[in-house]
Amino acid sequence: MKKRISLIATLVITISHSLWFNSANAQVDLSSNGIPVKVDAPAGATISKGMLNGEFDGVKTYNYEVKKGQFILDVSMSDEDMWQDAEGYMNDAMDIADDEDGFELVSKESNGFIYKYSIDGDPDYNFYYLKIKNNRAIEFEAGLNMMAEFSLDDVKKMYSSAKGAL
Image (cartoon, rainbow, N blue to C red; front, side):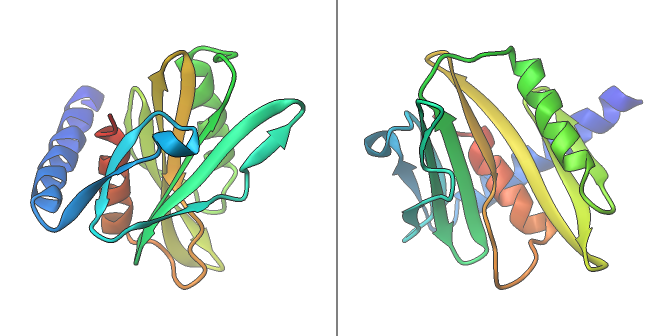
C-alpha cells in the first residue's frame, strides 16, 4: 500500500512538473554562486543570498534563494565532503520537520518529502529535497515567505524544481 501511495505521489509530481515547466520558466544556474546546480524557476526569478550564506566553524556554506512571487526555493550546500550518508541527511531533515506544530507528512520519496504544518493554527507547507553532486550534499527547501503561507501547489512546484535540478 505504501509503495502504491508513493508511486501515485511521484506520478502526480511528475505530471504537475511537466505541465508547470511547459509554461514561462527559465533555467537558473547557481554555479557562479558556489553551488554546482541548475534549477528550473519562473522566468524573471532573482537570486539572493540566504541567511545561512557564510563561513561556520571554518567551513564555507553557500545558501541562496531563487525567488519570484510564491516561488521561493532555498538552496544550500557546505563546501566540504558529505559527513554522513544520504539517509542520515534525510533523517535529520525529517526530525527537524517533525518538530513543527501540526506536522503531517504529505509525501515521501528516497531523497525528499513534502509536509504540512501549522502557524498559529493556519496550514502551511514545506519540503526537503537532497541532491548529491561531487560528494556534496545540496539541500533544497521552501525559502522564507514573510507575506503569506505556502500552499501545497506552491510547494509542489518548488519540490519539482529541486527534484529536476541538474
